[in-house]
Image (cartoon, rainbow, N blue to C red):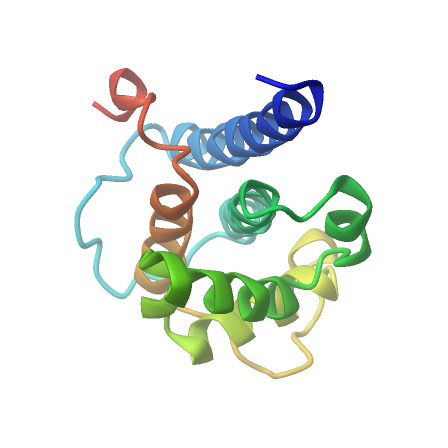
Length: 158
């Protein structure tokens, strides 16, 4: 494997690992009660949503790194999950992964909460909306699966 390919795969893996760490921290913050199944229409705690929104962002960045976006290009996205989603969706249609299946309305709301740091500072969302925990959770899990972050983490997901 060439040096460039090794660096690319190191970036992909490190972003995927961080994405999973944020997701796992959200699960642990809930006392491990978050199942890997449908969890209903509960409203999520802002701290849990903040952790999951970071997981979504990093999952998308890992996916783009895998598809030849370099570190500089990835950093230019900032924390704009909706912009990341648009790029992931284009690549997803080429590679048939779950990003094409994500609900645009949910991604838009999560992006608003994340990019504008609403969850961090407990401010009012610019869109005036917050997704149910179920939608947040499903989006986070789908992103983790799409970037491959969940493949080697089965022991943590019991």
